[in-house]
Image 1 (cartoon, one colour):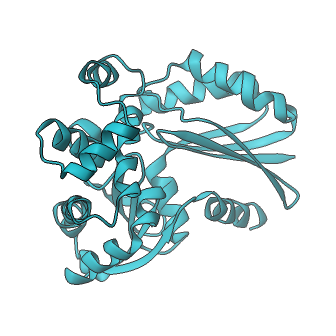
Image 2 (image 1 turned 180 degrees about the horizontal axis):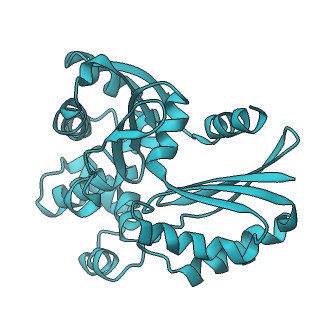
Length: 283
């Protein structure tokens, strides 16, 4: 018998199939129920997951997903999974709980996601006890690739980019206003579209203009969100995600300047989620 642990963000989903100490990873697109229907999730599972595993051998599924923040949204994913795994126990969780478990296992702390989007919570070692909402890429998501993608597009059209950055941006990214407007208003994965422009900051992270933009975004994430958790300075802060991992030096510096403790940066949480769940299988 086997178990599946799925970690689904805005951009991609990793499906880890674990059996008798051996594991295999299957990668698919992100399956956020705010952007996907039950049918579209089923299509991905049917075409890209079921073809690679023995579904009848799956005993448990733990699905951690971006957008699975309400019972209605969890149900969208649950109803997509159940027809393929009729004999399995299926549990659907918000990806923020997955981040907390990956960061701290059964210890308390402040867990953060900094990737395509951003999020955070105060975790007591078992459950999320405080959560300041990220407000998604339109209203918030400070410190994320989506946040920085918005900032760089805005700076370009406001003629704020230094000439060398403006030239590099035009040479490597589609700066057509019609194209960007269509992606923002008509695209199925708006957050992923905007976040793709955030990669520009990583390509020019040594430039003073970009350094200032990064620092402003991370300062906002830390001071406007993390520092508002109860007794925030008493806890370690740990990060999941590509953005957090890429800028761990700057994030550590900003945290320490505000009396907070950086406890670690994890680019991919799957190994830690496997540890969390396989420990419980053996207990």
